[in-house]
Image (cartoon, rainbow, N blue to C red; front, top):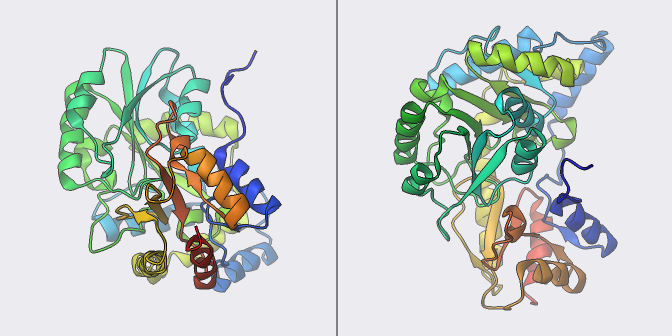
Amino acid sequence: MSKLPNVGTTIFSVMSALAAENKAINLSQGFPDYDCSDELKALVNEAMQQGHNQYAPMPGLIQLRSAIAAKVAGLYQQSIDPDTEITITPGGTYAIFTAIATYIRPGDEVIVFEPAYDSYIPNILVNGGVPVQISLSFPEYRINWQEVRNKITPRTRMIMINTPHNPTGSILQEDDIRELEKIVAEFDLLVLSDEVYEHLVFDGHQHHSILKYPNIFKNSFVTFSFGKVFHNTGWKMGYCIAPKHLTQEYRKVHQYLCFSVNTPMQYGLAKFLETPSHYLELPAFYQQKRDYFLELMRDTRFTPLSSKGSYFQLMQYDRISNEGDKDFAVRMTKEFGVAAIPVSAFYENGKDDHVLRFCFAKKNETLERAAERLAKI
């Protein structure tokens, strides 16, 4: 009997397959079409050549955990113990699953904001939890904190947040954090904060990491992805930061899910992080791509929504068609050769605001070819 009877192939796999079948430009799945740093690849290769090809320690190499702690201190002015508060994981999605598997028991309720990254609700369900969905307000995609309070029950165990947000590109503001802080204290909730796009914040906005707020962090798992940061999503490298008492429990589960993570890549990333410009230059790099994509899309009938972070841009197509977003996305792929993700796929109930998600983490020539085709719709 299936634990996930209503779950099929993800929309990302479906649209990427459809793009390949129709030789379409794939702006659907969230990965770059350019390579990662030659320097980083050389560092990983060097580690392999030096014989670092056996199991790494279960929590991850201390060199890498120490480099992450130094990064956190520089970015967020917080002291994180690399020995007891950082765990290296095979990707950000794994880090999220493990946090849920560690603390969510059958019947526990988890608050999830929709549209939501597609792994959240299946992760809760497979561990016996009960997802409690709250829709972000359209089109700004902000949290209604009074609605959050209204949905909390004695069974509420955890609240999941994601900033910068996939798929919308919205970010949490200072006032959101203060509301979250009050709720966590009042109801003694755990927080799972997905911050894989931490460096992709635009227009002078700040990333309000939970790591900056000790009163929330003491109840939190905060997850990150090297793949999103360093353009190597296929490496599946990430990490989870949590206070010692939560990390102790997290590692009990982690050691039986994967035990340890790719050794030579950990050596390479540890060295690469010694140069902060490798991640400090990312906001400007991705803002240029977002701005260029928006400029190109001015020649189309799509209407952009605000994207303050991530590498996604939402577009309304209400001036083009009244079709449902899934039908429109499929037709756009087949007839015009550009694939995007229908945002209704990020809602359990299929809420359809006639919006598509485009990934702009692409070469300029890719974005140019895509916009040229989209202008014909």
